[in-house]
Each structure stands twice: as C-alpha cells, then as structure tokens.
Image: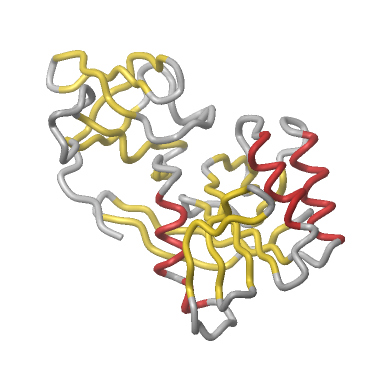
Length: 218
C-alpha cells in the first residue's frame, strides 16, 4: 500500500477524536485524524506528523494525518487501513479463498469479513506498542468487546486479526489495564475455539507493507 504526497507538520493540539491542529508551512491548519484511539506517545503538542491533502477538497478538512513518529519508529495513523492491509496479505494465511465477503452481518453486528462462507473475521488496528508489546485497545471499546462476545456462538472457524501498523512489536496482548471487558471478551473468544493472528508492518514515507507474523498472548 502506497502513500503519496506526504509533507511534514508539527502537532499543535488535538480537538475531539478526529480533529488535529498542526503547524504546516508557517500556518495553523485543521487536519483530519483517522483514528479514534488515544495515540499516547504519538499525538501530542510538538509531535511530528506527516500529512497529505485530501482528494475531496469540498470537505471542511483539507488535510489528513497519515503517519506519526514514536521513538524514531513511523506509525500509520489510519485505523481503517487495517482491513485493506489484511486483504492485501490474505494470501499469507493458511486458507484457500473460494468466496470472500466484506461487512458480514451476524447477531445484528457487522463483522469485517466472511471467508468461504465459513470463517468469520474481525480485524483490529494496533498502534500502541510499549517495550515491544503491542496492545489493543488504546481506548476503551464497547463495540470491540461486543463483537468478540457474540463471536463465541459462531459454529465454524473464527479469527481475530491484529494488524500492527508499525514494525517494532514482538507480541500482541489485550490491554487489560485499560479495558477489562475487552480482555474478558478475548478469553471468551479463545475458549470458544477462536483463533488469534497478528502481524507487524514496515512503515515508510512511501507506504506500508507486511513485515512478519507475531504471537498473540491472551
């Protein structure tokens, strides 16, 4: 997946979840931040971000934050990219694709993918890494917990895939101290036969690509 037209900016402040004010070419501009998480250690006053102009200039926000930096490591900020990255790398998983559906509804919940009318898949974007440990979530997620809780009733194969949008994680764990309910949901999911996957990504100013699979500890 490629990035184009990135330019360096400096964070001034974050307003609400998706609004980011940055200093860019001597001006203060409003930038769209495509991530509802807290992004601790990544988004803060004076932090470096890389932004690009949005394609649809009719919208109020003309720029979008694409990358952040933490301890010299580039971090992809767009949480929704995780699904696209998973799709691009599905060939790396031990499954022969015969049928592939996006946004499959089950128990009144919308799940990310259904593979071969059998494998129910939910993808999670990970940006929080501390001492080599990737953690999800970085903000409490009722929706994320409910998805895993309902997946226990799925009678066929089911996956939760953590896409770490940076390269420095060695393992992934549920962030129990931040979201106890999500942690419990991972235990329910695991006991019901659910399978966890995780992989890291190389992130550069020109794009983001698969690096390697890593372990998930629940």
